[in-house]
Length: 357
Ligand SMILES: Cc1cc2nc3c(=O)[nH]c(=O)nc-3n(C[C@H](O)[C@H](O)[C@H](O)COP(=O)(O)O)c2cc1C
Image (cartoon, rainbow, N blue to C red):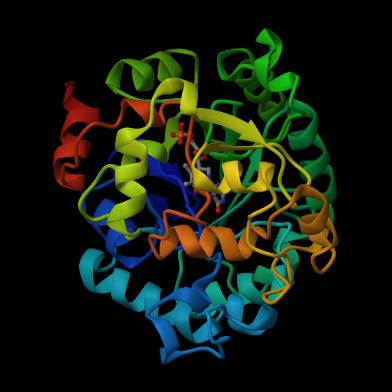
């Protein structure tokens, strides 16, 4: 698979997972193994505790500059490079975050090769990478319409996407659909990739990557046969030794049953898929942690106003999951999360995905 100037041996991208689920160890190892490792830029202020950032007593990064810490992102990328050398390495930066443009520039300055952006329409993405012409830009979309809009807006930069990720409603975390659409046949991944492939042909030779609910080599082969150039997978990578998150989150997923995985509301304004744990229980009986905006993480939340409405702060709860807090953590997963049963190495996982179970 080729994305911009970068050749990736296996047609597999490890999806970005924030907070702290795909950082240096996971992304570095995936890239070393010949797939594309993706560092999440979300909540880098949580990286290695107090080393980089101003934090509250409860270890929460204060405000945007600390939550999206430039120094921490630089160090994560540097440490990932120690593992993968010059292999292509990507960074996932959500469009909905405060300071989007600054974080994109931070990642470019730190030597990232590819930037992947979802959660919103990145119509201005190329504006921030003008000084870094080698950096490949990859938006995530959930419809042909979104792709068309992005390509139209990018005309003024003289750029088309270096690849497109099409994400269906079985993916982990935030969905690019309404709650009801997530269950409707016409929005399932196998039904949305075709129109995106067709739309892409109007703009150039853009590799198309399918994401959401892809689990094994059979699934990968199915989407390659449908005309995709590769796949992005995230949930399955949580079941690796190298995944950066606390062991407690890996346990939550390994213990989860199919019926424990549900869509819930999020302060980002999109449905989000997670394992139902103590957090959701405590939200029902009003014992959940109080919402007080500290990190000012995403613009749609409006400094905690949306968080108050939905009943939890996304930055704090994902930060708690990263730290392994079973009581107050929010544990995102794809709909296949219950299928994880043991930890394996990234090497073994890539072998399974490329050679079969
Ligand atoms: C725990 C978790 C966190 C995620 N965080 C992000 C994120 O920060 N940004 C993003 O664009 N996608 C995020 N995703 C989506 C993944 O990158 C990926 O596209 C999707 O989960 C693929 O579906 P799969 O998990 O079924 O393989 C997350 C997914 C999971 C499971």
